[in-house]
Length: 137
Image (cartoon, rainbow, N blue to C red; front, side, top):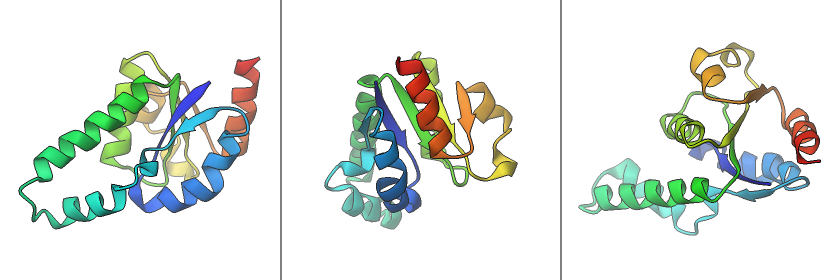
């Protein structure tokens, strides 16, 4: 199986170091933050000073949607609500992809939108990995 790993910019280092390696034990992954220019692009988005912000935004979103289209599902790490991650979750679910969420914060785990647009919510990556093993057999 192959999964797109959705997460916020501020969690990218944590996801790359702790979450993604565990998922890679049982599945292939695509991490949108593996794109080599994402850090400089993010700075352009924050500054909003470039004429190319709209073109860059469309390029970023189209690249991420293409990644999702080439995967069996999306795994989202949600430390706090995020517009981009939420959009990726909804897009994935509406396009028939498996959607698994890792939400460590108890108060977010039963949010109606997360429950509606996911197949399953996990409290940690270890439980997710065990679940992927069980459905991959």
